[in-house]
Image (cartoon, rainbow, N blue to C red; front, side):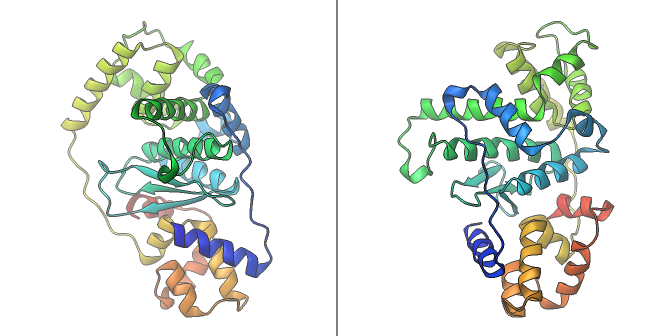
Length: 298
């Protein structure tokens, strides 16, 4: 991630392109709801658009592209167990970066991790958070920061007003939510049931005890599912899924402008040169069903 970020900065300078500036500054004193609203406004995603997305994979692509447009690089990394990390962020400016573990099969879970890490970047921009090496918070203080990021991400993904409107059409008593009911509500916003349960907890529709009970039921439900078998992604698909379209586009533009060599391009993209033409063609097309597979398998 660090290497790709440095390459992106160098290529922007070589091409004379201004580096986009991420501008959503956040402070713990703002409160998570206000920060979530600020992030949502920055990304420019409407509830109407969100509820019109075809599925969670389209949702993932739109959240990712909106965050990339806001001046944040978004990468995916393979071969790291989920119990080690689901997401990481580079708190460096300009051009901070977020990495998402591609072992996370549910696109809705990737979205939640993505916006959660975006909150950490906003806190870092507001000088409320530093890289781990220089942090001195206690475990209890870190849990407070993590809870703040969870609630801010939940507000950004599921705005309070939209949730209240959805709840007016559902008759469920506080703490009476079961897995199917939360899944149905989550489907309206193209998010995971766990993200929706977190949002219901923050909104008061679930108490902490009710949330923990629901989460235990959810984990039991997940354990009953058969694991999905992995598939195959093309070399170009892996490059786009892991490095992102903006990074790939930047490398191709530098190559076409004779700012870098073909060997450089292949190294930056981790892609054999005989696949460069296919990548260039893919970058000139819109996301398709094949792109869904790219994100799923990268």
